[in-house]
Amino acid sequence: MARPLRERLAEARRRGGRKLTGRGSLPRLLRTALASPGGRCYRHCDQPIRSRAVPSALPGRWEVRSCPSGVVSVTSYAEWTRRDPTPAVRRTLERWTEPKSLVRAWDLRVATRRGPELGKNAERFLARNHPSRGVRVVYWRVYPFRARDGTERRLFVCFRRTHAAPVFFAASPTASEWGCPVCARRRRGRRRLRG
Amino acid sequence: MSLGTVAEAMPGGAPPKRPRRLTIVLAQWCPHCVPLSVTNGRRLAKRLRVPLRVLDIDRRSQVKEADRLVLRYGDAAPDYLIPQVFLEWSDGRVQHLLTGFSEQVPRTARAWRDLFASDWLKRVVAGAGN
Image 1 (tube, rainbow over the protein chains, first blue to last red):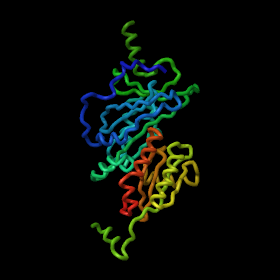
Image 2: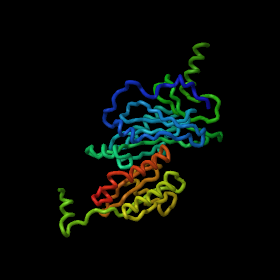
Image 3: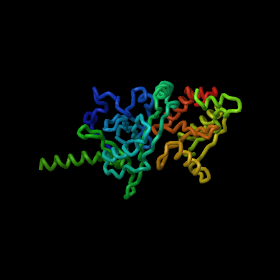
Image 4: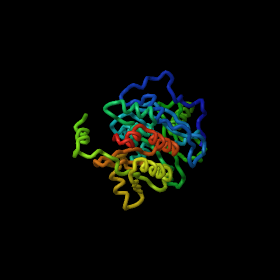
């Protein structure tokens, strides 16, 4: 599937963005400790995976790992909190996904990072803070599936800067057209205006 | 000094807490689990001088105990992440140590390396509890 031109894509990082000091937000030290650079697109194109941070109303940090064609490997949300952020993550993903039925409970998996497995700096940082709380990470991974017509479907993401937020959708990895439903609606709207 | 520490220090008081068993909840098909976490689990159990228990979620005889540990002490979800590593203590407490990193296998490998180098492990091996 052809991805839209690079220059049309929204900037991943907001320059001069707000400081992450709110409740549940991740300090830089923890962000570094959680980072997972590298990796390749598994069973699709074998191209390097790119991590993209996504802003949202939630205090934690979103990261979408996808290949250059837009196939999503995994989307994660990390928050420094004691509560399980899964319900809030699910609501946000439902807003970003078309159709929202693509977001299913069994594709959301939570992990708690307590410190010792994050390296010395993060371990000491988390140990200094009382009452102790770990970092909760919710992963959203949609495995490839078959549509009713038997063709393979994968989860894609569209980051076009005309979208208010990332748009997740399922499409065939061999389709010739970029299948983002929001882009398609805009195209149809433009055609109607011209006609 | 807390009352618990006083009791442990006194002759005839409660025995000091010691690690008792390390448990890994895993599946044989998971590359984060086999061989990575089994190998590192064995190493960790050896460092802690405790037996290692492996619970395979695809074995009917083991999945019930695996689910119980994860639901009660670990990272529970309808289709929870594996591997999950737990340390059982002599006082009956169960400590969740590690959950696999869904991003990629090398990240889970890094988490194991960090766990081995952690202050926490040094304290536990020295007998200072957790």
